[in-house]
Length: 95
Image (tube, rainbow, N blue to C red; front, side):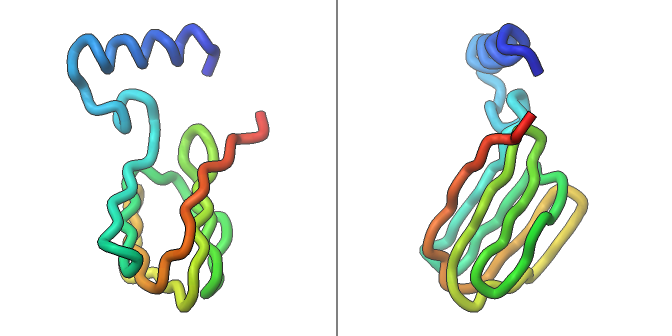
């Protein structure tokens, strides 16, 4: 996506008070303490181990690190993780 398209989407999202996660193709991550993470707007699972999970979304990758991580539920664009969450990092896509 070009820079001006991204800026236009951002402006439309703000002007019409639309959810940024949907308009800008961003993941929505809801955590419950450090025990659960619910990720929406994801497009694929890139890596899974009990210490790290990397999830693809339209504009990059989310890396979640922790201990005893496990996937509790996985749907087309949603994922529920359990375990001891230690960090969540957003990585840019290498386009």
